[in-house]
Amino acid sequence: MRRFLLSALVLMTLVSRPAAAWESVCYERPDPTKEPSEYPQGSASYCSPPAGPNTARHRWVGTLDEHRRLWELTREKAGLPAESSATVRLRVFTSDAPVSVDGQQLLSLQPVPFAEAVRVQVRAFTPGELAQLPDFSYALWDWATGHETCPLPGAGPDATLCHDFASHMGPVNSNHFLPQGGRFYAHYHALALARARECKAMKDALGAAAGRFGTYLRGCEAEALSLEAVAHHYLQDAWSVGHMWQRWGSPELADFPSDTGDQRDRAVLVALASGLLHGARGVLQRVPEWTSYDVNDALCAPHPAVEFVTPSGERFPAIGDDYLEVLPPLGSGDTYAPQSERLLSCATSGMRAVYAAAGENHGPLAPVAEGLRSVDPTGPECFGQRVTNRALLEGAAIQFRLLGKQVRLDVDSRVVGWMVPTVARETGEVPVPARLKNEFRLGLQRVVSLTRLMAKERPEGTELAEGRFGTFLGARPNGVYASGGVLASYVDPALPWPGTADAAPEAKTRAQALARVFHQGHAGDWCRAFAAEGLGALRARATDTTLGVDAHAAACEACSEFAVRHLRVGTGPASYDTASEPVCHYLSAGPYVYQPGPGTPEQLARAWCGCP
Image (tube, rainbow, N blue to C red):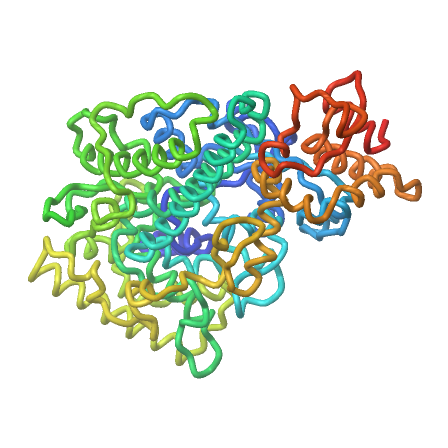
């Protein structure tokens, strides 16, 4: 029996990955542009490959999308209208450069200058889906450019491998744990608020004409909500109990010390060890159907010894990954009601602030749900919670029920000490030489011994969660890396986009890509840009008879998309319809193009471009 149990455990673990918090999923759908409600449960397969360019081409909607469901629950409780969760369909102007995905040649999703468009591709998503983005992407710009490059310094050029969670993204996901997660939330919440204020400025500039140009306002608001959704990933993680402690490490591979160049190898082992403490249900439950077991691992599954402490000293039970359905309704008085109320108070406060700042363009805000409080979503009430020493002791083991028997394997046992380096080799592509393996085992024994001592002396204390673990494989607790001005080399650049003043490498390129993908929301920015560049290049390309069929169609759509924003209906400055000024009249005072009627503005724009 014992040998069978161990064999089953090894089998389970060999398909594992580092800790990811509430579940994120990518599913391949025949039509990726529908509303989430139009996708029947169980009607799609997981994305394959599950990382890199492929995940940017599919929807993140399915049975395990806990981050998205938390966003939708928050939206409902925050009083945002359902329309704000509708599928956004961005028409993006791209080249026809090929991208290899699992042997298939697909078209690149990277946006190009509008006058160089060869294809028009639809990027469909809901803002809530992007609450999963940090599990698939390094930043919003990374998603916007199709996950086609590797943003992680030192990780190599392979975009699919670079985005793989087991070997690259997981090892640097210390920013999904406290306190680093608080800084990343604050960064993205600030971007969302800043973008929302730009939306409101656009609405104010449009004045009485705002109703005619709701498409641009809603596009801007959807972008602000998308940034807030990315922020919410870190906020949601902060309330998954397995993340309420200082995981070792940094969001950058270069911060993992090594004199032999094995930073990524060490980072993989650190992430796997962190995942064992975090709670392993999410990675160990996925095994062939013939096994009969339940991974009720502490810091995921409900456990009487797992509690967190608030900054004011209150202590409450908590649950984690894969147990979203256990979080009770507000006001239920259930065991986990305090965790639910605090999470939703923080989440609704941040979401309402962004939606109100943007001008409520999808509809008016309703009152927040009864039982929730308005709090500072960046403050200690939302990021000051820490798991207790006793809870971390329970987390320092793998627990599961198999064939009716409860099994516990301490993470410093010989089995786990052998198993984790094996997983590092199999899923993380880490060689793990004998010296590193021994260093890992000794480090794990020290961590667990310290956990036992602290849990005995101060069971309800939070010293371990605050960084008392010290270093592990040379990596320090993540709070050490949570200070300073730069979060990570790959975060989204400072606003405004595309004209960012951010001096970081690639910042201007990334800002330009974001503004090209969300081009309708950036109507004012592009109105002003075309004032400098002019619209002639778009028209010249649309009338270029040497273009192929697809390139000509893309050129016509690009030209008409932007021409309509500058189009006055008439023959010239002395004779045009002054009652139907274009959007750029309000946002940049021109320049203008003229086209006589009859016809809709869109039809007249195509006529000006020389397109049927």
